[in-house]
Structure formats: C-alpha cells, structure tokens
Image (cartoon, rainbow, N blue to C red):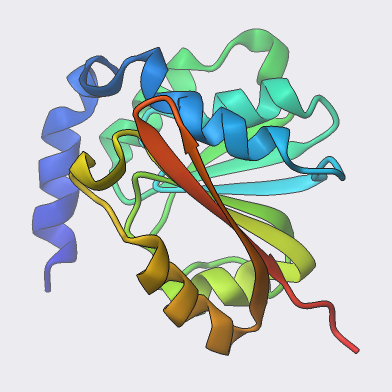
Length: 183
C-alpha cells in the first residue's frame, strides 16, 4: 500500500540525493568495512539510492561483485550514471523491493544497509551462513532513517545473527552482525 507513494517520493529526490549527505556521511560505513577480516565476494547494498555505498564497497574490495538495489527507478538510473567505468564489470544496480527480494537464499556474504529501513527476515534470508550485515547511519540518531542498535540486536538475534559490534565514526555509527554458520 505504501510502496507506490514511497517510490514516487524517492524518485522526486533522486537528482539531489547525493547533496543531502556528502562524503562525510559515508565515514561510518568505511569504519565498519575496515573491521572486516575477510574480504567479501558477493555484496548486496540494500536501499542503494544513487549507489554511493555500493561504490565505496566496490572500491574497498576489488574482487567483490556488488549488487545495489533500490525501490526507486530514478535512484537506480542515477546510480548507473554515476558508476565509474572501472567498476562497471563488478557493480550492477537493479530496482527491487527490500521487503520481498527477488534474490536467492544465502546468496551474499555481505549485506550493507546505509541509512536504510531493515526488513529483517529478507535480510537474514539472503545473507549467507557466516556472512556479515552492516547497518550504517550517517548522523547517528539524527539520521532520518535510524534504527537503534538495541532494536537491531533484538530483531537479528532470533534470525541467527551474533557477534555484534558497534562503532562510532564521524558523526554517525554502525553496527556489524555475523550470521551464524550452519552446522
């Protein structure tokens, strides 16, 4: 019911989206990525917007394939236009609904949510056993879409996530979680 109005809202904001945050808004994500001991091979950036987080991940992990997904076709169009040619072979953007992902189970070893509403069950479904999830918020509790770490933990633990790590960086914060390895 809310998907169409939400899609239209983000479509109208797409052209000026990158001006809302600035590069300093990516500092919490970068700090979280710095803590990963194993480089990811398959990465999903949920709520990619114009692809800034997807580009950061792709530059940080040169062997990773990155999928950026967003509900807004205009955001995806802008993300594709902003993608540097050197990343084009490893990064792709697609329109999709994070609450009902048209993606295979356990297909990503890193899932990134940058200032994004988490749809916990879908996130857990597409994260591989032993995979990681990163929730980054550019301006901490002042981020327009913000989920407190306590809420993230409470919702993720029953879905098989553990090893939570909280980070403060720049003006924001991030939470990392690991999905338990299958026995």
